[in-house]
Image 1: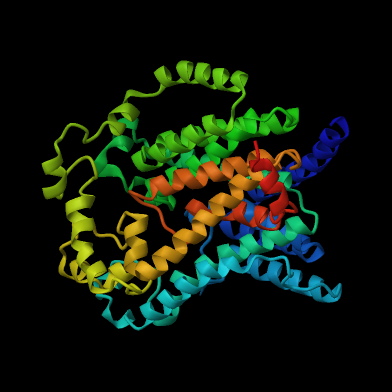
Image 2: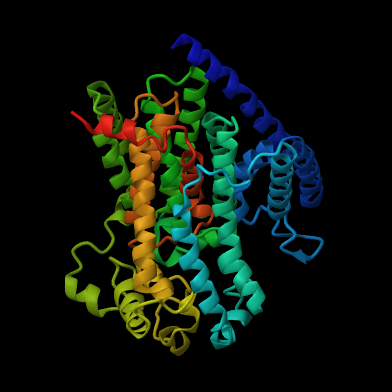
Length: 491
């Protein structure tokens, strides 16, 4: 055990130093403007990636959450799509392919589960269907810049190709972990990334001068769009990372350095979740946190967590409790018949019920990705919330891929959850891997609950941590050991 802890410590520290050096260098360059920072960061990242594709993947994990914010450049030299993230992703993929071909290794290993096609194929079919409806999108969607694309090619790029980049990143991450990259190193990148997101959001809130009562107001839910993310997406991202860090801090075998890193990250994302005032994300976190007590059966850990909660909950601002209590006791009839009900923020009568007619019109295979854009309720103004997101992950799934696609995708996500749980039960897992698998299972469950009021089944920065976890654990040495899983299930 001592030897294993020493090995983990030696593997953990260099990645932390590399991340700190890159962040410090980018901050120094940013003092001269965004362009110098992007050029310097891109040059350094490119050289490191050419040396080792695993470094490129590590850097992609680092910048994925922050890439959704306005502080991250969306294009360079006026070229759409030519941003640092896409450039680094392309360079990483090319380096990966070159290395595999040079070493005469298979690009697609035989041990790769093919079940991930259960996600790709329904989404691809829905994207093809959606292209045929591009001309049906009302013109105000483009004039008001509700979407970033203006052509059918741009539609396919934004609604299909971009989410598939995150799926591909997850698969590359699995290959990197199979080739020797440690999960601990990837978790370091996740922590540093959440530090960047937290620092930007804290600065954005402080510079705006808004108070907690304004952030908690139902009329101010789009405040964080100026920072690049909706409050609900920000809350979902923070909730996923927070549950991972809680599982990390409960592990008895992590090193002191790792415990310090995880503790600081936990504090940062907890503040981020509170600032989002996202009821759906907070409720999803509570459900995931409940699974923590199911997985953690050590009395010492449970008592410690309960005591910490007893000290922390009274210190939370009253605005947060008022936000969480919004709409309760308002009456069921108001929820069903009013587009202004406070409990669901007008979603039931103002969004969900009008869109059910679209589900009935295309029940089997759906009506394509982003189907809300050409739906009759949206074009006629029957939807009270002017958004292309129906604010319900499962309704969005039914609208876009239909009942058939919805069943296939739900089976895919359930299999993902079961894989996390199976790996989390294996005592032979390395230090960090077991708690990470259990944390990922809890975070996925919490995100599924959050999906009742928001979220997306397609990969995006707000749920990117879950896809990264899937990639890291997909090719884990214990992932396909069914014999071990059966032995763990025996009493």
